[in-house]
Image 1 (cartoon, rainbow, N blue to C red):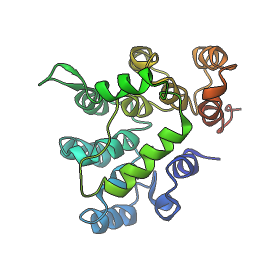
Image 2 (image 1 turned 30 degrees about the vertical axis):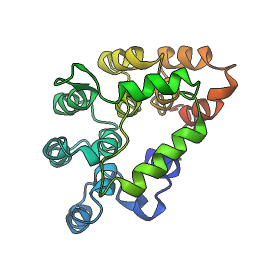
Image 3 (image 1 turned 90 degrees about the vertical axis):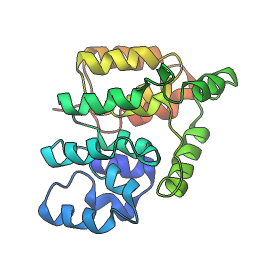
Length: 209
């Protein structure tokens, strides 16, 4: 299973799967056609592209709140400086001087729901339903997911920052990452039944050989 299929399976968007990771002229023509009606899916489709054009699109749309959740998915695989600038904008709200969505995430942890597969899937469903028209449901864990597959110091700093309140997203971000550090973190949550679903996602691609 490749990253394209994994993302489509998590987000349940088979009709847009063919666009994910496609940097061809044909794909960009299709995105241009979809942008007004389905901008959220255009953002998600940039997963794994890491091109000058994709970075420009994500940067130009980073202030559109209804797209924040999708942009986090679109940043997956990109470890460029431009991508990290977008991540930092999404991570921290300078106006109120706190991570975006942190209050909801802390409340969710207080209720013991920060490991819930059902709530994670509900957020996916809600964002898909309202993301193109209304404000999306943004949390710090979404920015963590944008580091999926990355094994850089910056990626690990972000995981360490939010692991306590967003362990599911941290585990999901380990997909396609089988470094010693990633394996050690998987081992840490191996016996946590509430996170078994996220752990399974983190290993679904399988180690590279």
